[in-house]
Length: 473
Image (cartoon, rainbow, N blue to C red; front, side):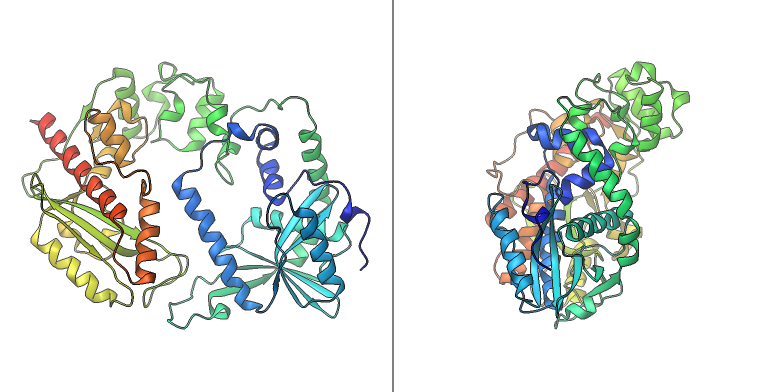
């Protein structure tokens, strides 16, 4: 397996990431390569998913311990990484993490490579419970690059998360992960990969972006990074502001040139909530149809913090099973009545839930997104969920524009409301959850930044509740 000429040739123009983007949309590929600055900003949720993938990938190294990490230190050191991978393979080093390969201007960085007497086996890790078509194409691209550079693996496998894994304080990678041999599938995909690589390279060499209309491909398998740019010239609001209709119906109306809301009628929509949303945008008036509050009158605002960790940390929990990290509560219209209850490291989860249940029993709560409340607590006394009210169009403000995040809804309804400045350190629930998990792991108190964020969330819920009760009366 001597080093081939193709493996040390021109710099790459395609990576796994850009290749997968090309499968979704050639325009997305072009913009990603030529006009990256136009990309939509990544959401905190997307950043959390990427972080989760990296952490799960590192734990998979425990299946193959004592390997060498051959990853490039930066985007400027691919040549060194390629040379190191080739050197380690030549030396028959048994386990290599982040092995780099290049062929036909395509770069692949494989999660794990094993070498048994010169016979290579490739492993790609996914923090998922199942294998998707996109994962197969990803793996097939890597096989294409490895084979072309002279290092075709004898076997190619995907390592995914075992959906039946139960938490254990003594983590074993062999229990948590499942390995699936997909060699036959990736080999069968090679002719298609070759054609798609050719098409992608042609797109990259174009002098102008290919003209591709908006369509359902903008949403699958992932939301396109440039969908905001491609919709920039559409009238506001537009058909994509109608978030209560499925994406397929949105794009169907768009293809019929029903783009502005004036071009859309009630007959074009199926659900009652979508029709209310359309009417509210057209009428530019707040829609109000609040339920009767004769049975429960809230006296407390509550903010629930739920997490679904890829690697469970609670007894009898499986991967991605929901758990309660904590709750913050505040007596309505009583400034100094905020309380926090957080799950601590090694705390008995049943006892923690019992503490929260006691608080629930003593209060009538109003929340914004109760999450998985019904999976643990008595649904007969569920908090009033203002998010549910907004989504079901019991209440809807035209300025919401389908964005249901608490901060956006409050700033829309109460533009003059002011809250304490958190300096942006914890500005979203995903950052909050990361802080709470870190505090648990380090057995320390929760940071002041997190407490300030929670205080602001409670004040926003209280402000929104008071606003609704005021306009209702």
